Image (cartoon, rainbow, N blue to C red; front, side):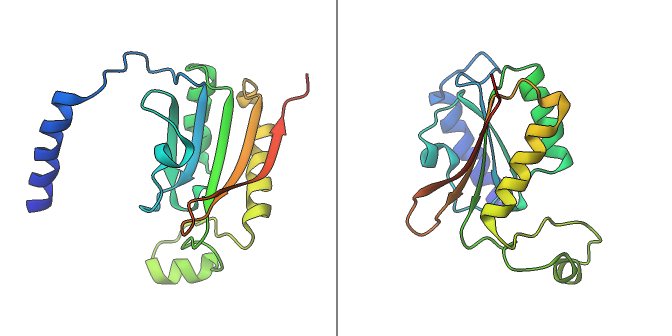
Length: 162
């Protein structure tokens, strides 16, 4: 319970000093799909500020059905036209299989393991580009964030033909 109390105490200070962003639509018309890894400070890494982008996080930063659900709302209702899919080095999903992850977790799930970051990013970008209800998306980029250096590598990009 001490950790919960620390969170609530920190929130009291935040609430007093926070920037109030009134519009739910991201100011830069952007969404970022990235990994849940605690080493990634998405806003700092990409120079973003509160209210500028939707951030969707999951294990591996992969495009899953729930990511598609979120992006349907982001693009169709909240004005998002650009998506960045950002994976990272030293990811726990790199170099393992679904079989191993099922055994380790006891969960009978598809974990979207990553054998090759560039290939996984191209696959996810192709899925986003081919999804009819994501037609408002004009640009989709694939980045790899290096957790040791902090450098982002621009691996792949798709742009809707004019």
